[in-house]
Amino acid sequence: MMFETWWLLALPLVFGLGWMAARFDVRQLISEQGALPRSYFKGLNFLLNEQPDQAIDAFIEVARLDPETTELHFALGALFRRRGETERAIRVHQNLATRPDLPEPEREHALYELGQDFLRAGLLDRAEESLRRLMSGPYAASAKRVLLELYEVEKEWQKAIDAARELQALENKDYRLQIAQFCCELAQDALQRKRPEDAVKWLNQAVQENPANVRAPILLGDVAAAAGNARAALGHWLGIERQDASFLPLVAERVVKAYAGLGEQGVALDWLRGLLKGSLAAELLDVAFKTELDQNGPEAATRLMREQLRRQPTLLALTRYFEAQAASMAPAGAMAGNGSEADTGETVEGDKTKEVTAIRDLLQLRTRNLARYTCRECGFRARLFYWQCPGCNRWETYAPRRSEALG
Ligand SMILES: [Zn+2]
Image (cartoon, rainbow, N blue to C red):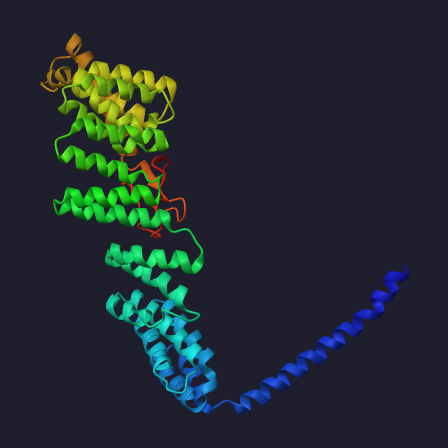
């Protein structure tokens, strides 16, 4: 009871204090408004009337009269960049960066923002120029991070490696995963330029940098295969199982091709059939289906898919099952198409073929865009596997398995 009485007494007091605080704020605001130059209100008015260019002119005028308004400019610049109006953001930040009276930390801040504006505007040379002027001081690490992003866009992988190493020292953060990927990018460039020795050099460096990197052994296998050494290539690709077996589906087609080149198709098929029994079944389904179909025909492929459906019923396996069935019925289908009379055995067979092809077509239509890789950082979905997400530009964010979800 005692407590409640006190509370009732305290309530008017709290309201009274709130009222006084509000009055105080309003008075302070009015006195501050008096001190602000007219251009400030002019600028605000332009901004509210969606005349941003006139607003910038007015605010630049404010800055000339009152050098204390830099915060306003940074806010305005950030707003323009966020809205994608990079040209306006550049104008605001450039005006700040070139002001002779600006203290050094704020000038550096302006250069940093300017670098990001140029990057967003695709003016990469100018972005690099701005950011390179910030190699020491409080913005050094942030500038280097944006530079790293820039080198990745420009595909300047050697510069990216250097920047990542510097960042590693500056921030005490691990960049080895990225550095190994940059080495792989350089190796891929070297492969395209037909310089396998350089590629191998970069790939070995990638492994050294990040022993868990799976892309390097995949590419080392490609180098060996290109040199005609299928056995060595298989060694690299199959060795991935020891690192992370979930990446095996990425090399399945390569493995099948290499075994075929050695005349050992049967070994490839046994390998695939073995993997189909495990957790990688959904990922390897297509390769296994195609290999079985090519080697042993549609009946064998039908059998394989039937077994697979019993183990793990998926829409993809069902689609492949009906594809194999339709393929094994193709001759009967051709006969039915020739307009046979009713009530003959051929027509019954023909009807069944039509049914199977109709189911196959429907399933193919439904599953065409079904299996997709999904970025675990931003959720970007892609038909192809990417080492760097095209959505958020992060590295190794795609699991090598495709999700079978509609959408
Ligand atoms: Zn992403």
